[in-house]
Image (cartoon, rainbow, N blue to C red; front, side):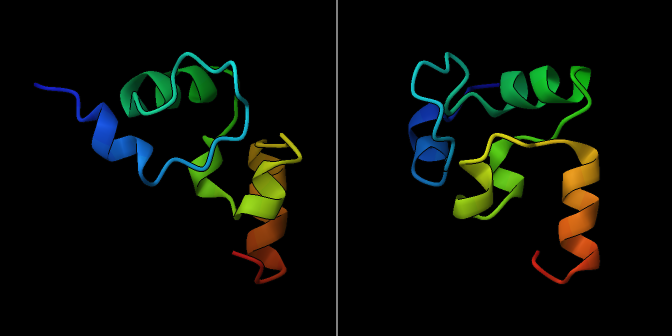
Length: 67
């Protein structure tokens, strides 16, 4: 399967600049799930920039209708 990194980068909102997984969604998802997190693309831009990508934070946002 061919990685569509350039296309993925168009919608990637990850603000962590030295990230080596930007645009490589399969690696990004694997990394974050291993750390009990969701990738930045699951969060609105303002929340993503806090780097709190925890499941708990995501659930809070859903409960408060912010996502």
